[in-house]
Amino acid sequence: MTDHKIPAPLAAALAEKGYDSLTSVQTAVLADDAQGRDLLVSAQTGSGKTVAFGLAMGPEVLKNDTLPEAALPRALAIAPTRELALQVARELSWLYAGARIATCVGGMDYRNERRALQQGAQIVVGTPGRLRDHIDRGGLDLTALKVAVLDEADEMLDLGFREDLEFILGAAPESRRTLMFSATVPPAIEALARDFQNDALRISAIGESRQHGDISYRAITVSGRDREPAIFNLLRLHEAQTSIIFCKTRANVNHLLSRMSNRGFKAVALSGELSQQERNHALQALRDGRARVCIATDVAARGIDLPGLELVIHADLPTNPETMLHRSGRTGRAGAKGVSALIVPVSEQSRAQRLLQRARVVAEWGPAPTAEEVEARDEARLLDSPALNDPIGDDAAHIANLMERFTPEALAAGILRLWREGRPAPEEVTPVQPRNSSDPRAPREPREPRPAREIGPSVWFRLTVGHTGRAEPRWLLPKICDAGGIGRESIGAIRIRQDDSYVQIAAKDAKRFGEASELTDEITMLRMEGEPDLSPEARRAPGGKPAKFQRPNSRPGPGKDGPRREGKKPHRKGPKKAW
Image 1 (cartoon, rainbow, N blue to C red):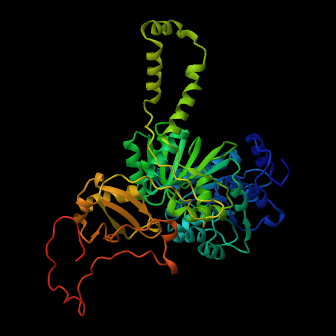
Image 2 (cartoon, one colour):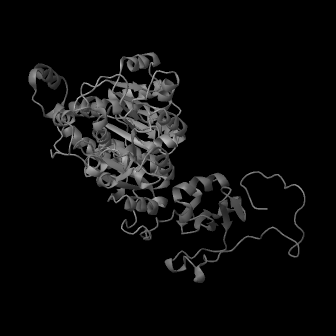
Image 3 (cartoon, one colour):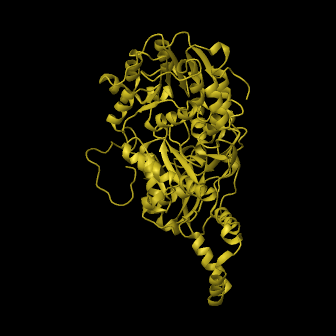
């Protein structure tokens, strides 16, 4: 490894750990112009930032390449969550072999932490609230502090820790060195840097994390109803040792956990409403294999370290490129391969494409895995299983007994049943081909409409919703049936257009809908005279207006057919109608 003026003890620790080169962020913090200065660093998950700030604070922690006596702490690292703080402490423990490192985090025994501080520690790692508590009670003395590190500074501000950070840094000498590491640098972080740093050097290491050479990005296009089945089939297709699914809200996390548990997936959830003990139990279940899927919000997943994480699924599209890269960076580490899959509803393809372009990531677009594809992958895994391919060994007698008792077909069927046992059944999905991914504005490819069901004499209705309202036949069908109290056999063709749709109803049941019916508060079903012109040329009338249709008689008003109705609307049963 090239000499970057790394102190000898740290260089030895890196060599023992197998480092033969440094990442760009690690190299940047050791550059000549960064020596002894405050640093404001943009770095994503997977860029090696923990080792980076460990190396950067070496001159302040060490004295003549040795660890001085641990009277008062010389270095302080602050992280937003307990998991991240403990992860930082583990990294620093091998980098600074022999150093006393004290942790101060919520959910741990306060008395043990205080004793560790009293015994002396060169480095203290903690969360803002617990660190402030120790300072308040006199257990943590920062008067000898040489360097302070704020890890995930943007997340600490999002969680409302600014006041705690101000208190902690205010208790340290003004001569200290301050290193701030943040995934993004919004105005709030810039303001914090101005308040607590002096002439900080700005370092951006985002470019490196955007490469993610060991991560394969997939964009899975789905219809509105197939979002969850697509997630289930992705999990079954890959059967990763550990997977993580990101949702925007706690409600989405809990809903998805319930659906997955019902289908037999071994899953746990991480969200802000869990206690520390519940979080510990969930993480332990993932580490010991009792659970293989973690469903989490972005905040709740900060700092967690999942073993063998091979698959990241974005159930809800990330809000920005940095969030997507931060989520995805949890897989594909240390030379291992990983997959990051975005679930993209048809209506959000353009937004997903812009997100990928801004992140400078090339994704493979395609439909969700089908049940047949999952079953084919299962069969391939079974045929490649060591249980079938390893030598027979000492089980020859048992095998002979089974061969004598059962036919080969029965044994094969038993193997197949045992293989499928405990594996959730794959879901049926309707493959949706993405639009031209190179141009997010490209129109949908025209599809041949399904042949209409023969229903005899019929009446056509126009619906005030189309592609722009995410309409699709499977979504409209039950609403139409409920509104008219009819069965599916009374519905013929359903044709979706850009801004409206058309449905064919058997003449004997058309009277149930009257001249107009409300399917929802925003969707009205209007009776037509004759058949609509569904040819491509007639989809839109000249001037950009929708093709004309026969509206029902509107409510009478002054100067028309008489006065408006007065008083209370009459009670009506059955389907809603316009009055």
